[in-house]
Image 1 (cartoon, rainbow, N blue to C red):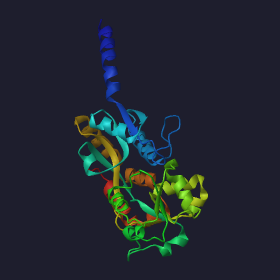
Image 2: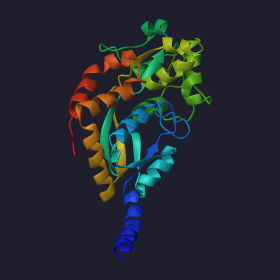
Image 3: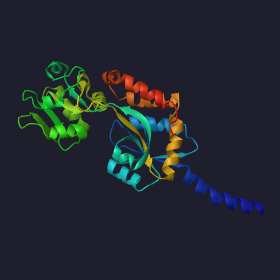
Image 4: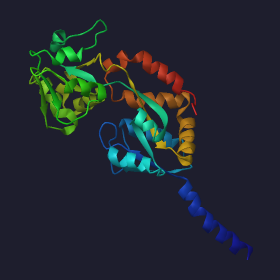
Length: 286
């Protein structure tokens, strides 16, 4: 009778324990942030982050959901027991979620051929004055139609003068085709993230010869991290994740994940900020 009671008790408790120990990760569906193979993370930025954390959280069962931003943030807003990996932080998202900072992401860059750089309007810090560039009818730019380039840059694009030679295109492929147009001289410049250039150059080597230059009106690195719903479960999960990444080894792994997909120029340009972030990330913050 005693053994039967124990067996029944175990049967009742095990499902609850399994449910409690299941960790669901909401993964971005855009490379190189995430590049799943058979539904599992591999070498993308978010992939490396989540693989490090899951390896140091063996008592939990980890599962991965690959979804677009609309779905992932709806799940967070609903308070579902899942966390978004490699999410950029902003004031709106801070109202919906608790964050663990994992990355310092270089901002949107101007991309051009090296021979074009002397023709670009630059300030004393080597940053491009995008407002002046957009007003220069001798410079041909190209961007993706209906894509957001961030609030600061979008505002400049919206008020560009009528004689601006900035064109829009509907070609997508994560911006790779636009970068190819610049590399072939069909346009003088475009706007994109450093990691997008690095990713595209893996399959299109000529794209790797393009250079990135910071934009004066958009020159601050952005915080990226893991976002969990703003409820009791989310707070407890954030604290657990923070303990895992809040070590010198964890901080190094987070920086390695982002540097895999950022150019050497960008790493050098923001080296001081990245080093300071890594120093702070090397200990728990929660």
